Length: 413
Image 1 (cartoon, rainbow, N blue to C red):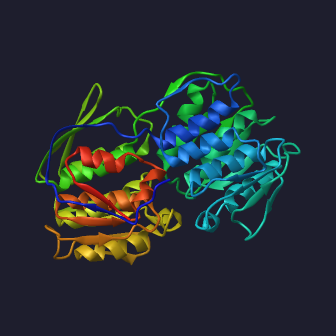
Image 2: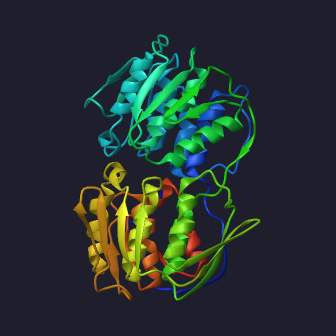
Image 3: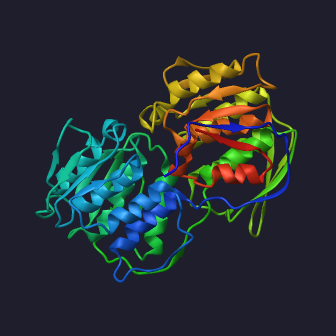
């Protein structure tokens, strides 16, 4: 893979009459790959994501090797832990240095209650992790916190139908990222699985997945960066292709969020048309169910001079990087602050440098979402993004799509 030290983006503030062919949803793709792997025979998956995380999932699901390297793909790690924990194979799952700092203990503990035999090879609670052949189901019920990563819950849900006795999951406390759990269950239903969700309890009886074809939607997380560009540009009207008004993805919330930040979204048969409108001066946004939108929204608010009160950012500390610290560092470069005046409550203070920028350089912290959240600032001036290859994780075509939009993109070694 060709890598570059940085990417210089030359200022463009007019984005008109543009159709953007977004990457497909990584969230949908990774779930469908697991569900399809459980189906016999396997069905056809249309419009599968080209994201590195999805390519990694696809490759590892078909691998016969005993050591599987997920690289930096957190979803792939969590889904494969559950997938292999109930298999008759002996598998070690590992990843990058950062991946080995991301916790999996809550998921592993839940799988141990079910009967899985799991061993940590280095730091307890973290990868690399050894999964031994499943000796048999010991419990039909689990209790797991609802405010942990929804990927833990989704991983357990997807293996539930193939367990000999099925599974009942009791979610305790506040349920975070609920749309991702709903996405998982909706996709399972497409593959023929019946479930019962009453209150905070989900029950799934033992049953077989059916091999049914599925076509993946475009990625709403990837769409968010284009909403930001429209919000920040002087003139803009673009269409984002293959996005559904009735979407399974929680990040569709970007439509309502950006409506407050100056972007109108009108759905058409083949996507959504974005155009500019008036914006609010202050916003109050809960990211509990859409944490991947936080960076995009914070940067947009800071650049437009919009004050913000944010909540639901807790999970950002354990993502590809500490996204709170990364945002604080990079927003300071445009004179903005992200503070936490009370536990769980964040304030975005735009500062005095909103408007126009000249030749600013932004770090990305090995985080694809930092790179793409900061790139729209090129509508306000020339910017340089360090380590631009990180976008491969979720949106490999991002830089070429920006070039298509009229930005001059210069990769620098």
